[in-house]
Image (cartoon, rainbow, N blue to C red; front, side, top):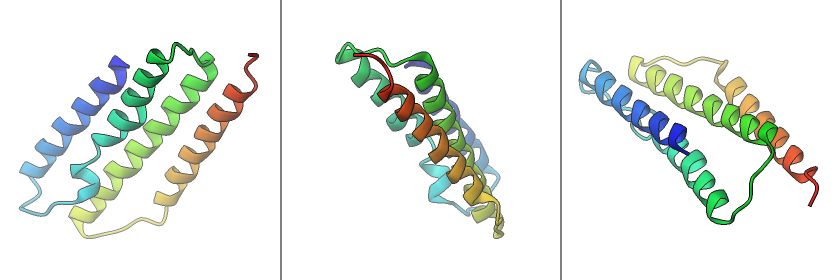
Length: 113
């Protein structure tokens, strides 16, 4: 859980510093990038801890990769929005995040009861 909180703080610091050099142009993808590891990582990990469940390591790692892919996609979209450009490759990050999330869920479902 602490890794997700540290990632959220890192995202917030990165967004604040980037905003200082963006000449007054903002992107919600950059501004709220910190929420991805905070809600998708720390809150889920806290819920798992409180429920006293321990998902398999492979599931946790796949979920962490999904969170990382979403953070990277949000960061790049924010940078592209601020720069006034776009990239056709951004959906690839969303597909990667979905694939990793599905792998994590399938692996968790295969866990013996």
